[in-house]
Length: 260
Image 1 (cartoon, helix red, strand yellow):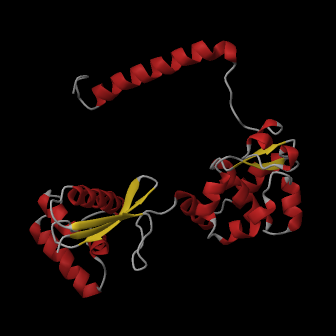
Image 2: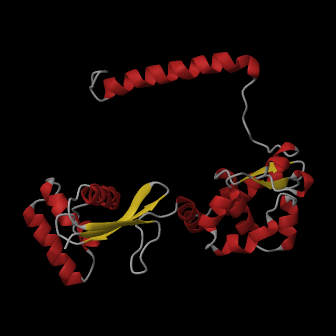
Image 3: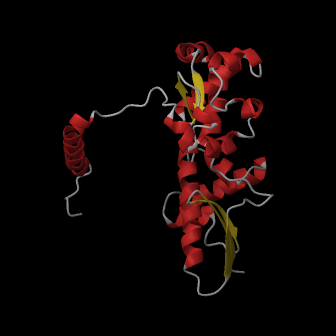
C-alpha cells in the first residue's frame, strides 16, 4: 500500500514511516552503493541474531559509525518526504506530533548539552563562570519561553520554574535552595550560553519580564557586544571582504569554478 506519515518540527522532517519497501534504509544504502549486498545480508543476520534494529546492526557490524548512521537517517527521512510529494497515487499526512509508538531520532541540543555536563566534572568551572554575576539580576530574553518548553522535562529546570522572572539576583536564587550550588551554576551557564538569559545590574523594569518591550528598556543585559556607530562602515567593509575571500578559498579548497 502507498501511504506515509511525515512529522515536521521547526521546518525539518524529523520522522517518517509508510508502506512499500523502496524507502527502507537498506534499500537506499544498496541503491547508492554505500554498502554491498553481502554486507547488507550480514547486517540483517546480525539484526536477527542479536534482536536489534537495523541501524544498530549497521553500527555493531562496523558498516557505519554512529555519526554516519545519523546522517543517513536524515537523508532517508528527506527521501521519504520527496517521494511522498511526487506520488500520483497513495495518501500521505503531514503533522507536528510524533506517533506514540515512535521516537524522533533528533535530540534537542540543549538537553544533550545538559546531559553531557552531568557526565563531565565541570562543576568548579561553571561555578567560577557564574561567580562574577552573583549580585546581578537574571533577565529572561525574548527566546526564554520557547527554549524553556524544550527544557521543561528536565527536573532542574522544572524546579527553577517561575523563579527566573527578571527580578531576582543570582545570589537570591541560590538562597532559595531550589537547586544545589552546582546544579544552579550549570543551569544558569546553559541558559546564558543558549541566549535564554542575560545578567543585569538592574531588574526587569516595570515588573515586566525582559521578553516584553517594556521590560527591555530599563534592563540592558551584560555581555552584549555592540559596534560603535562611527565604525559601522568599516565593520561592513571588513565583513564584505571576509565573505569575499572566504568564498574564494571555498572554491579553491573544493576545486570548483565560481560559475559551478
